[in-house]
Amino acid sequence: MADTALYFMHDDALRYRFNADHPFDQRRLVMTNDLLTRIGALSDDIIVRPATGMADWEAWIRYIHREDYIEAVKRLSEAAPAEEWVARSDQYGLHTEDTPYFTGMHQAASAIVGGSVAACEAVMNGRSVHALHLGGGLHHAFSEKGAGFCVYNDASVAISWLRRHYNARILYIDTDVHHGDGVQWSFYTDPNVFTYSIHETGKFLFPGTGFVNERGAGEGFGACVNVPLEPYTEDESWLHCFEETIGQVARSFRPDIIISQHGCDAHAFDPLSHMHCSMRIYAEMPKMIHRLAHASCEGRWVALGGGGYDIWRVVPRAWSMLWLEMSEHPLKDELVRQPLTPLPEAWIARWSGEAPVPLPSTWLDDVARWAPMPRRSIIEAKNEQVKELALEYVR
Ligand SMILES: [Zn+2]
Ligand SMILES: [Zn+2]
Image 1 (cartoon, rainbow, N blue to C red):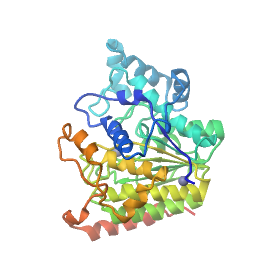
Image 2: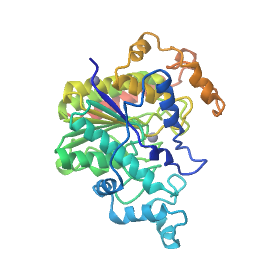
Image 3: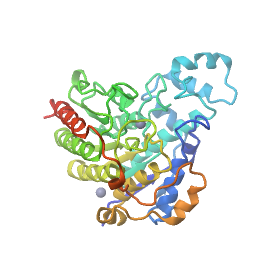
């Protein structure tokens, strides 16, 4: 029998929207839900809407975020924020092109925190073995400021919640193309929280950190691993570096629970990065994490969303495949045999009118039709070197 898996979502997360032109677009959640519903992989009895409310969420947010920052987020959430707070918005990182304040942001960002904590609670209290919260994964927010499209760091809050309520050892696995900096710095000195991030090197991409020599500090030294890959990295090299490093990390750390972040912006189509991966990594990487969860912590696994800016061609497929893996839907095995299995025609028809690009017709990409990447062997050799360096202190 398949392990139980629950799908968390809060409708307020759909209101997390900076402005009409911003690349962070929650229609990706609606499209994912629609795709999963059409293939019969998601139904109302599996979807959990967190029962907690603002009082709990604010208490948890204080585990990570500074009081004056929370106050600023609240004030700037008002329809017509007071001039005094608008003047201070810059110091809190909320007056930038990336992360501008918006009406209702406190409610929307808090509901996202509530979803991620609820997913962790369900797994720790045994209600389900796996839990998915695609609204979460806002990994760039800091204690005292917003950054990189992130207002509250739901991943950090959820990890802190697990530390306080269960004294759990947490392995955080960040597969977003951007370094999971907010989570890393929140737990940099904590030996009970291992932060792992695989991403495009900060030499060329926001936030400009996540180098191999960031390994934690004080008692937390060694409980932080970064695998910064070269621009234009392709599937084979990405998967190889991921499997070898995360396997060794999980064996060495022996977590009580795995929390993974699934930004899917390392895909070649993503407009905000320079990686050249295909849908294949989003089919295979969840399988690896799933296996590790069963091998190292009795299956306890919470998966969160994250970045992903080709909302038409990449995010719905990637996040749906994550759920197929967690819920052990038979289609996941079918996709191993037949990667070019067609997507439901009704889903394509539903979204084609809105999409500015032709929607894909198959679950995985037909990479045989992609142009070969120049410098492939140089890129692979550099990644191999980084992989070895990243593991230097993992015993
Ligand atoms: Zn399982
Ligand atoms: Zn990202």
